[in-house]
Length: 332
Image 1 (cartoon, rainbow, N blue to C red):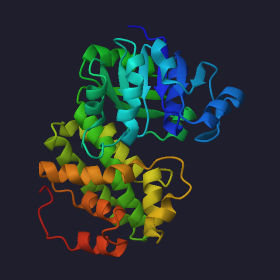
Image 2 (image 1 turned 180 degrees about the vertical axis):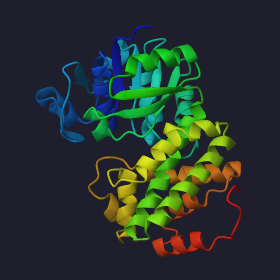
Image 3 (image 1 turned 90 degrees about the vertical axis):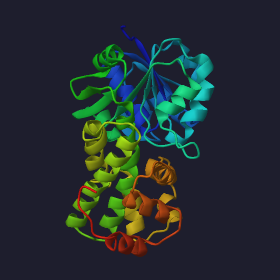
């Protein structure tokens, strides 16, 4: 199928960057924004000043506050914060064009239900073909047209190839996978681990500790992904290891910057104050901890990070607890 019009639900930095990806690929784009000031800014100045300042948007991109305006779209990218995915899709569902695929671009695990975003989609739009887009991709880089590679996961190989061809461009390269679970778990867990890496950085624990957190965190990510039915090869790709390395290595990451502030002594309230963009790791950490316990997977770094974010421990106690864990074989 040849896609002509793409809808993007959610006009944060990542949603706006993906709207640019679609426009550069030759699609007409309808960007849905919840915030009236974003609609006004994009309409009148062609810039999303609230979430992606300094980036001029392509003329192919129009903006609306109404989800119903996306009824004409034959391809939809869903980019609301993960904890609002269900409510957003429920409002959008009556307007969905039959057969139009939904590409899930938000990373997280739903609190309460402990569901992945594909499961949320299946419950709100059960007939919509699903795909997952995930990988090491800062919105600022993508919006500027800098080289980026991501995973595009889709169980229907023919649909996946069509989406890959549609969204690819000279600087935006999707790699096809069929493992939706592995792609989603990587994106959700790396945000929690990035907070832990930020804490380490803020406390001045050094590059050796930073590397250890990434490596042991990757082991946790893989264990959970496999326990949920994902493939270790998927988690070892762009959507898992690749995204983990990026998010844990730069304060440009909202999640790492949150951890950095906590490691430097700020409270949760101080670290989150004045932030418009959501740090998905903060929102997903309780669900990650609960899900790991439910399926019997040991995830000490994620467990400790969730405890800190919930106010159940301190930074120093968290570090001491991780360092005093029993010695064991590396593959256990």
